[in-house]
Structures are given as structure tokens and as C-alpha cells.
Length: 183
Image 1 (cartoon, rainbow, N blue to C red):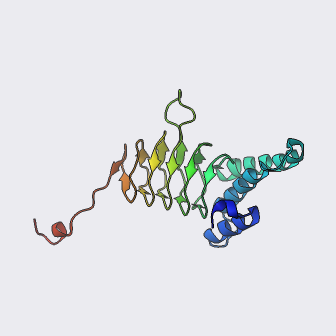
Image 2: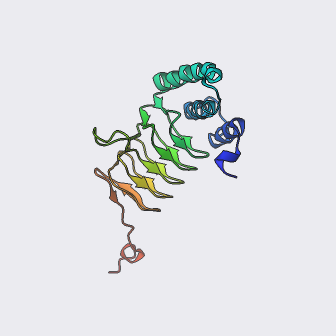
């Protein structure tokens, strides 16, 4: 079943389960407000949408100012995304985050150049973003990518790879021979 097949309530229940069924988690609350904000845009005409927009804006600002999670409704957010911890999380409005991804505290998904304000990161499915990581510009992270804590990603990361460092480099796995003392 795709995300489009789920109604707002089903998406929120799924997100609640992904956050260990704890409605008090700031990450769950931020995602629920995001889902509501995206849902309200389907309401036509604008006059009927207006009260829902007021509710969304109030909750969005509360989440941003109290929990430090800036997650605009324009972000293309996959299913079962988990925001693990609160604080200093800034996500560009044109970003995409795939299903089953994890975002931790201090993460920025943003643009890199002032003259290209709409360039934003695209994260595949099951991307694990470590605390303090910065993913900047029009970069694509493939499915099953791991981004280490405090890593600065400035270029694409292929599927299944681990990126670490400033600027990010792909971590090369060691062969089993070197662990066994063989060359």
C-alpha cells in the first residue's frame, strides 16, 4: 500500500507505531503536524481551508520553537519516518525523505548555495542520519545509506554505503583477510 492510499488518520497511526506508540515524543508530534499540514492543502476552496491553515501554523510554530524541529508541510515525507530526538533539526521545504528513515538531533537538510535556494537533499528509503549531520545541496542519498554523526554530505551517496567525515567520504569496508592477519 502506498502513502497515497492512506488517509490522514492511518498515516498518523502508522507514525505513532514507528515512534514506539508514544504520543509524547516530539518527533512524533512534529511528523503528525507535518501530515496535518500536507493534508489540509487538499481542502478546496481556500476559504474552507483557512481555519485548518490557522491550526497548522500555530502547531508548526510550537513544534519549531519549543522542540527545535523545523519540518515544513512541503517536505515530501515517506512512511514511518522517525525523528529520534529533538533539537536543532532543520529540514529544507523542498527535501524528500524516504520510507523508514531515521533523523536524529542537530541534523540539517538544507541548500548549499545562496543563488540556488530550491536545491534540497533527497534521501532514499531506510536512510539512517546520525546526530549533527549536515546534508547540503542538490544531493541524492540512495536507499540503505548510513550517514555518520557530524558528517557533512556535499555529494551523492550510492545505495548501501556509509558516509563519514567532513566533507563526507564513503567508508570502505575492510576485508576479512586483514582481520585474520593475512595480507
